[in-house]
Structure formats: structure tokens, C-alpha cells
Image (spheres, helix red, strand yellow):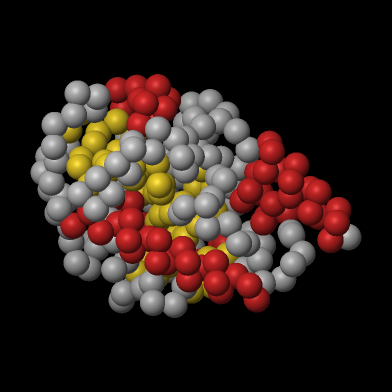
Length: 242
């Protein structure tokens, strides 16, 4: 049985690919939005490729360090998970990341909704503050984190080592040129002094979808080292819950 499951996982991983342009629902409740307990600030530098954000997110430079630490904890804690792969778990590997969710994990759903969908959220130690907490999915070692505020999912982080892609094909290792080709004039960028790269934000143009974002972090070679999707403003918080 384990051999058959392993073969199925390999097939689903091979099937993950860019599947077109993001098209998202408009049903996420506005009350799911929440204010970050610490706020944020950012500094921007001119770039000939992107529209520039106003200089309002200086603390954004700590994002890669915080997320990498959380990712390592998630992977370490996943060692105690059940080796059997359920259909919802396979869907995480097989589905692209959208601004509104990843397979059965949808932005705006509650943790109780997630369990009803067949996925068990487990809090990542040291990743929360107040009502904000990061979770991993039991049985899934894919390096992703799920941010919930008041038990409502508002953001999904994809960390180094993940094979998950967006619907347009962006992934860990994609270049800034790849992002420009995929998302054209819908990108904004700010400098990231920690990675010596940029924080690059994709905002959907469809009316009613302006609450959602894809946020990419690049290094000094212009390659994506991590990215996230979710609802504004929580998706823009550079340090997650911290």
C-alpha cells in the first residue's frame, strides 16, 4: 500500500504545473480581515520593471528570516505524522496556489471548516502572537504554513524546498523576469535589504478581488526564495504573526 501511495505522490508532484491565469471567487467575508498587532513599515527603491509601492513597509525585511525559522519547525514536527496520504493531502500537492487558497485550504474558512474537509491543523510552536497563529497540516511535510487569526485562515506561506506553484507557474526558484512575464503590469516591488532582493506583490484586477494578493520574496540573484497568498492586509505582514 505504501509503495502505491508513494507512486501516486510522485505522479501528482510531476503533474504540478502552471495552469493559466488566476481567476478567483469574490465570496470571502470582509470581517475576516484583521489588523496586525505590531503594524508594519517598508522602504522602496526605484526599479525600471515594476510599479513602486509607497515607502510604508520597512519591517518587511525580516520576513525571510522569520518564515525560514517557522518552516524548519514545521518540518521537524511533521516527523510524527501518519504515513498514509489522504485525498485532501494529495490535493495540497496536486493543486496550484491561488490568491484565495490551496486545494481544500481556502482563505476565509475556519480551522473547524478545515477539519471537516479532512485536514487536521497543528499549531507551530513559537509562531503565534495573541489571536494570530501559524499551523501545519498533520501528515503533510510540504514546507507551507497556514496563518489563522481568531481561528480563521487568512494566509498561506510557501517556504524554501516546496514544489508548489501558482496557477501561472511561479514557484520557489522562479526569477524576477519570470514573474514579469507571468503577471505583466500587475506587479509592485520594494527593496528587501536582508535578501538583497525584492518583495514583489501581485494584485488581481478583477473587481471584488482586490482584497487578495500574491507576495514573492527574491534574493540578490533575483530568484524567489519564498512566497505567500492571502487576504490583505495580513498577506502583506512581513513577519507573519510575529
